[in-house]
Image (cartoon, rainbow, N blue to C red; front, side, top):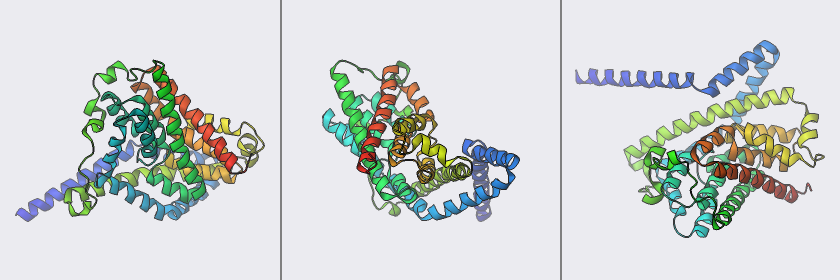
Amino acid sequence: MVTNSLTTQNTIRRLTSAVTHVNTLAKDPVFWALILLSGLIGILDRNQLMPSWVFTLESLWQMLPFFALAIGVAAYAKASSADSLIAGVFLGNPVRATVLAAFVGALSPFCSCGVIPLIAAMLGAGVPLAPVMAFWIASPIMDPEMFILTAAGIGLNFTIAKTIAAVAMGLFSGFAVLVLQKQGFLAKPLRSHVSSGCGSSCGTGNQASEGTADINWRFWQDRDRMKIFTDEAISIGVFLGKWLTLAFFLESLMLAYVSTDWIVSYVGADNPFAIPIAALVGAPSYLNGYAAIPLVSGLLEMGMTPGAAMAFITAGAVSSIPAAIAVFALVKKPVFALYLSLGLVGAMLSAWAFQWLSGYI
């Protein structure tokens, strides 16, 4: 009798979980984007629909080993609580904290939107804006999963340069804030309605002041941590999988319909404004750091210069439209304007440096 009851409970739990996943999928904009794009291509150019999906599935298969490695790294950091080490870099001397924040930001597992709750909690707890801005700018540009996937999708040299750019942009932004604050600007960055009620309601708790969580590098010995690992792996797998599917599908359409001559004329080596154009286009139109990898790879093959690719991928990582909207709701207008400016200027400077070092100038 007890066994039957447990079986029934497990069945109900699985059914409830399945219904939840179906409801989540039905509300997912990426899922609907794929459906709508497929339908549109099926109507306008039926002969392209099957090649696009074949290209997408083949590209996903080629990325699968790197995909699995990226998921494992991220899930391990979460289950072991290694990600809680991030909070410690923001304490102490502002100059030292800014330098550390830029380096740790480039290694942290946060995207441009995912970093917002952490930023809100730290600013609400009184952490200085300079190290927060350094972390804020550097974090979405690179993380362990993105390093692996970018190296696989674009190349190791480009990935290393992007990592260096993340650190450099973080340092540039953090020290720019320090200089401005010494002149009396940016004293209270948060909007009043945010600063009055941030704390744990921002989604991260008071991480900056509480220090690090209890870290267990051998998390598999703890049943609760194993559950965290499994849940995180599934969550990240779904997240990366849907964005990469959309990205590869878009890349197939780009290769099919976008003229190589058009790419070369606007962001090729012969255009002296290729890098500013790429940064200005990339900042608002960037979908997701993982989605950008195959898109940039395709653009490079079509004639985009490495510097323009770097400008596109770094500017977009910092200030994509979803992230910009979240930031606008969080901080005062001068801080928001500074955030956008530092992202754009830092991306262009990093791109010009990369272009020069690559021998294209």
